[in-house]
Length: 516
View 1: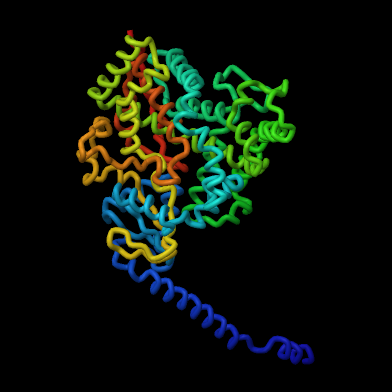
View 2: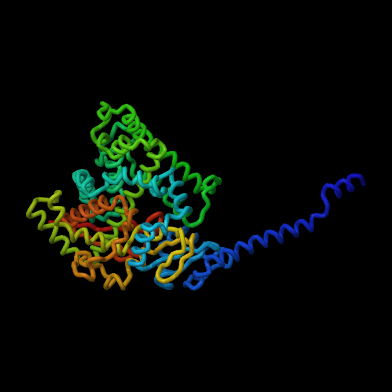
């Protein structure tokens, strides 16, 4: 009986308290819902896909990420809902833009006047890849990093690497020549190896020749590094879509793969980065154990001139550059090869130009490269139709902003569908046709076509010149040496998936025939 009395004193009837707690929780949720709805009232008039009453469109977004089809989800919504619409991550809105001019003007003007900044979630997702990186920074932190790397990736800076890029491209040609008849090759992995070897050479000083090694660190094992990059890229996309940062600490398969990947990349990069830092600290660039290629690498040059970089940030920055310098150009090249196979007129016109250069100058060099404008236009047209980075980034409004006559409240995320923008009939005549000529037309109507697939404004892609140089040279060599056809036809250009970037799910199998 004494125990009963004690229990009643220590634990009185909890029902009123429980009811009060539930009421308070419900009131808090209701107040937050009302506040969010009131803040974003102006967005209610925008078209929106059907959504869950509590989670909004988050279930569709997460499902699309899991199926590796987020870019297609945005593209489908753009076709259904028009130039500007809103999707909901719970009660948080994301305004999606689908018109090329609107996207270009919004990004350029918004980042110039400060009305748009990179969203906090996106910055966190970028920096959680491997540590603080340039893409994950803003303001002065971003500016000094950008300034440090800009000279190395400028058009004049990249042109001195033409010999290295040519060597890597010739290696691809030899691989195709050596393929067993009928020379059926999956070109996407081949281009991944090309671009990874080039960026690893320029940044880390690793020889592009797959049979060569460097004394500064472990060899470049392309399949292993690429798998690691894919795991990190997929993690970024999940976080950008709503997954919490702390979920990497859960005992899941995704988490185990992520941490194993981080360890592998650290082990691959650390010896070279420590050596570059040692050279900086000792003010020595002529160490006996250092190869000339490493001595001329971007890593050594940046470490030498920028004391703000340390081991952690150089590891993170190197991973960022490996990812950015590999998939983008590789997948774009695959799509270009596919479109050339299906467009005989464009193929023949491009080949005629390449053959003329060979006849007059014996090959492609720094001088003859200027005559390859049509090949560069093929890459621009490919990027218009297959923007590999579609749907993987966003900005956030710093103040109430007007876009297309609609008031977008402060704090709203703004994203875009590059696939929809590239097919905008108001900007691109005959948008479904593969017409490289549109990029060479100097008429008033076409001379200012938006080329937004490398980004716009001050945050335009750092590696744009490198990407165009690699792709133009690789396509020119393929046209010189081979005829080809797609093994699966147009299906290879339609069956696409997205990890961090868009890629052909079948790896783009091509049947090559050596020209006589």
